[in-house]
Amino acid sequence: MDSQALQQIKDIIDQNDQVTIAVKQQPSLDELAAALSIYLTFTQAGKKVSVVAPENPLVEHSSLVAIDKVQTAIQGTGGDLVVSFPYKEEGEIEKVSYTLDNGFLNIIVKPGEQGFSFTEDDVRYNHGGSLSGLFITVGTPHISDLGQLVTPESLKNVTVINIDNKEENENYGNVVLVSPRFSSVSEQVADLLLSLGYDFDIDTAQNLLYGIHAATNNFQQESTSYLAFEIAAILLRKGAKRPMDQFQTRQNNNQRRQNPVNQNANRQPQQRNFNQRQSSEQTAQDVLEAPTQESRPAQNNTQQLQRRQQAIRQQLQQEQVNQKKNQQQEPKNMDEVNPPADWLTPKVYKGSTNI
Image: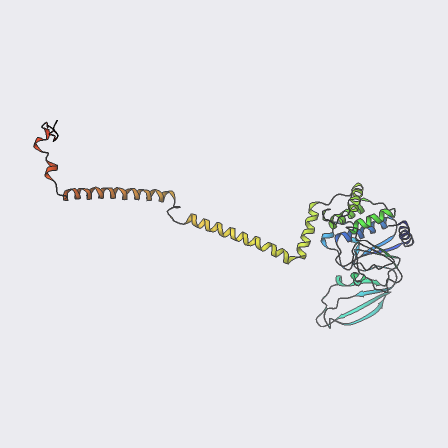
């Protein structure tokens, strides 16, 4: 940023004591951290600052300092006071009237036959068209992203500074600070505040480091700029601590809640594998418990062995009996039984060859 543009921004800030900072619907942690960092810095500078958003912050943003300062309506001293009642069904509110009683204006809302579907906590109070001074939007590509916080008429008498790093930004406002070269809005705001001469306390530094950490996925995104590392080093020197692992765990849980379909799709194969393993283990257990010859208890094996040995002995005895019977039934050759008479007489060999 050139010195001329920087001086213009400095003059605008010096000329406005009332500053309103706005973020879009469902802001990221990076965008909300950047907005709260501006709030803390300008509050220390003695300005009257407020932070507004169309909706209340998520629980995942509770780690940010001054998160309780975020309001869902613009507060101011000028303009009309608007009291808003939820109106969901036709005939829920039958009549609205007012009375004056001891210096108070009482607005009387008479319910219909079915009664009210809302409580006192659902009633909203805001000053319509009460914007004045400086209006800063952070991470908000379109004015329409602010919902009912502002109207085109309410922005006519204020100076608007548009801070964002998204290419789709409409480049609205009196001062446009839109640059996609920043990997996070927090580093962009930190660079701007340092260039304007503001210093960071530990709370502001911690918020900014949270924002950079979340936007860059702990500096692992390919789009992480060199400035993110430089700003992070400055914030660490100011006393900020690197976010803990549990902080990233909360971010992952938030993403899973926002994508329940993908979560279930990833979980089903694991469930099937678990069921398959359980079925396989059950089948193996059934095989081990089945009364087969290979897996019977030791006692059954011993009895079976004894029965086999007894059967073998019976078979051998039967074979011996059969062999004796066969021998008795075979006819005997007397020559084989009785040897010849000259068996023991010496014999003379008689050849047929003359010598």
